[in-house]
Image (spheres, rainbow, N blue to C red):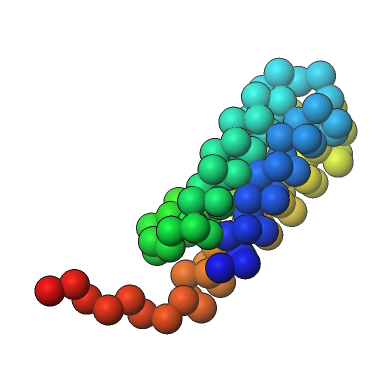
Length: 108
């Protein structure tokens, strides 16, 4: 699923952005690094081995990124905007992946 790979790429972006646009706030840097690593791992895992719950977890991470854009004080507007816009894109891609996947056959 290409949506999961895109979420993994966004995870890489959050890792890089933690050093580029997060400013000097430790909370912003830590949030970007932790969420970036978790998103990278879950994105790759969801792409390689599809399970619906993985995309829902990634969507919850997207909600957190939107909340963190308002929660943590940012030195730069770009840092907050990165979290909010990135979180929205994560949610859209994750929910898209959930509903675009054909139903899995039930195991007996």
